Length: 257
Figure: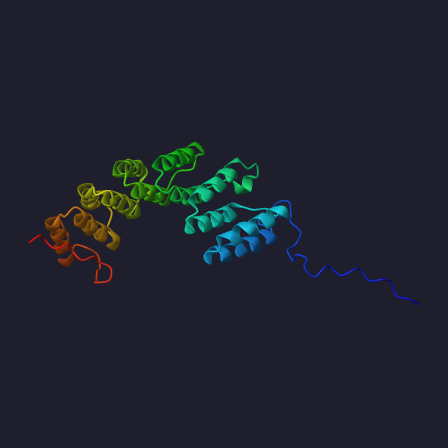
């Protein structure tokens, strides 16, 4: 007797991804396909292959594989690292209008988008306001990211305004936010404002980090304020600062002859 015919073998180039599930499993966990997809996207993002990241994302969309905020964060990170800031913000705009709730932005994706605002301080302010409208409280990462736009735009006044907003919630405020504001003031040659923030950290119960001391010295250097720089250096040497060495502390500007 002849045996029953075998089922045809799948084509050699067929995808090995499992069929895309329509929702989370009954246990509340993400489908395995989504987990694997995010792992693949993350590997490409870490390798700075932003084009492959977008290509893979398009492929997963065609297969109707559920995506989540981890996916969104990976794509935004890839574009931000590549300097494709406008593309990142355009893509982020599409996630905010998607009907798929899993792709709706959260504090992390908003914060990454804030870093993509380049020197557009107004856009950063609008994103912060949108976060509040969505009942997402901006945290230290959010404000530090917004302050990057202030530094790029050399807008020290808006940097101080963002800092005051951050102070309203002490739980979402730390030395990194102050450092970002100091850096924005320093880049705008507002060295006195930068030093004011530096000396005011103690009043906020914040301990200056190595970065804080370096930014303060850099601000003095830009403002040719050698006396202030020497005073900061002396405080560091006298033990009022954190651990320091030649690698993590800037050289003080020399006084004019």
